[in-house]
Length: 142
Image (cartoon, rainbow, N blue to C red; front, side, top):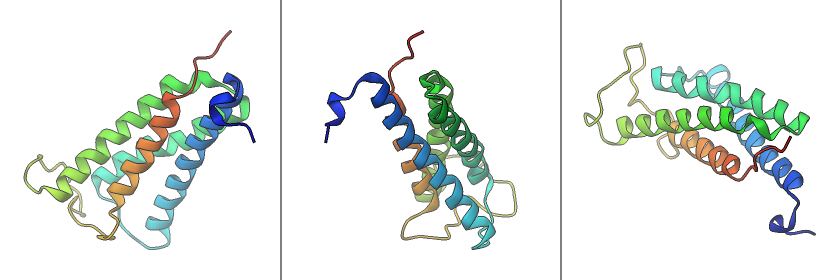
């Protein structure tokens, strides 16, 4: 078995894009499971995180299929946006009153369906993993 550090740039990019895509796909399917099967109603900040995650599953899947490392700036931008919103959501959840409450919908942002492993923490971990994987992707060579 070849260690990751010994892979050529193309193989390394493929591996990292596959990891990022897999994380985005699992996060997307997980959020759909929570809302469509478990009937967890998403709050405003959950929607912002979904707005960043759902396109990542598509973009990274297409980039992986095409072997296109040029997706990096677009995907990393979405991932960092999602990381920001999930961080803000965790702040709202763990330190009430510190951040202005942006939730104006029927579900407050500080309601947690899974207190043992909060959904915003799950999103934060997914965005962090995607960002780290994308940081390792080499720029494409034309």
